[in-house]
Length: 325
Ligand code: T6T
Image (cartoon, rainbow, N blue to C red; front, side, top):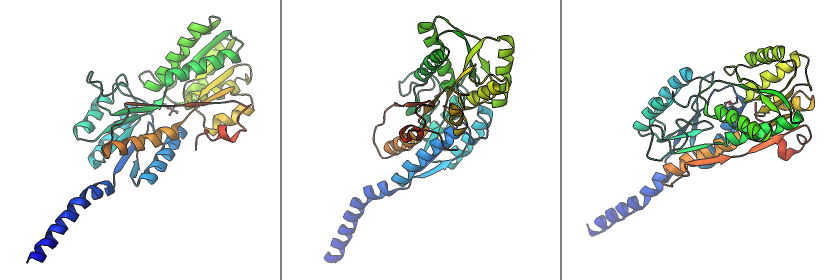
């Protein structure tokens, strides 16, 4: 009997010791909801997220809408909340329209981290405002990126002339901030550059191409365009080509899919500012995992840029930042 009791006590002790190990062995499921699924930027983010998930033994669920739009993103988010993952990583497609839908996740006890874009002001865990509940924001510094684009475009046009921003829609944190940084830099440091009215293309490269031609029709001295994201830049570049203005109207592109990078060598695009989406995805998963296993995490993680030009694109250290298709 004593022996049996001792065995039971041992078993209990073993169970007590084993349980924290069991907790660590728990398989977490982390959902990644991109801005849209068919965008090389988010495809590359997924690659980074998968690398981290594999390293940590986490299951990654990647689910998104085919368009960059809150109307199509919110039902995907609701479906993910219903599956009750251990954490949600999301690139919210609107700073205000995603607040309430994401609060539903928070209230269901699912930790939320935003990647690439933010809700509210992007300042989280401050105890103020209605959108500070996400744990962390992991992204490029988009105001800085806009300033970098302005410097590159000003240099390409010799410091003077008319330019404009080809942008997606107002209300998207990333592209709003790029436009803001671009205009600030031009105002502060390039007084001879005239920034014309922004053209919003709804993330449609065909719209961006037609708009380029319309702006050029009104301004035959148009010197350059800043494409504030992948589709804006691709469309603007196509518009320049269709107008027969390759090399005359300078193009600075935000984002670096192969379709843009291939045009550095043809001279259609002058500079591509690559974000580091794989890094965003990787640190998104690592941060969620750290939180789930009891670590505190930074409320903001900034990732970098790589400026790609015809001169450096042959360098493998640079070319590794070209997005995956
Ligand atoms: O520029 C990226 C991303 O940072 C932005 O929020 C939305 O557009 C892209 O996905 C490129 O298409």
